Length: 198
Image (tube, rainbow, N blue to C red; front, top):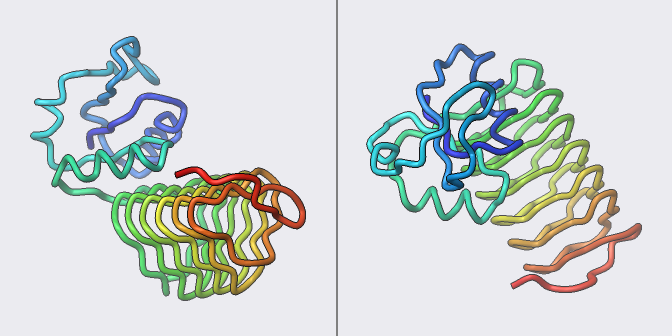
């Protein structure tokens, strides 16, 4: 497997890949100042990278994952930590990172290139669109919809039947009890829109 990204998120992704028995054949990053990560040399030759077939985008930024997914047309496996508790009745896309301690319950749908981060939980019938990041310890009740590119902050709680708009940002520890518009930045308990990020 080849990894794109050499930051902190990449460290977690690499360790999951190792636990799953993948050989890390190469790590690539745009930042030429980064020379190695977890004792793997980092390459900056993207002509070589584009020729590889089994690639994972270890990029914490949702927009960067989207941009790179549109640049390379290759195989994108899911990386699921062995300690994650996942029902067999989910619909899981490609290129997703599911971290340690995650719980995903029945009938959840997850798109492509999402991060379901450490110890977060998704209850029944949630719908997570592409390029979403569910941060550590975030909790989504049943039938929550999270639109493309949204970020659910660390420790946030989302009430059942709520929709989070595309590219919205939910702040750390926020409590969301009503729908959130596209591109809104929401903080507090209960959550309030403080600005928009277009």
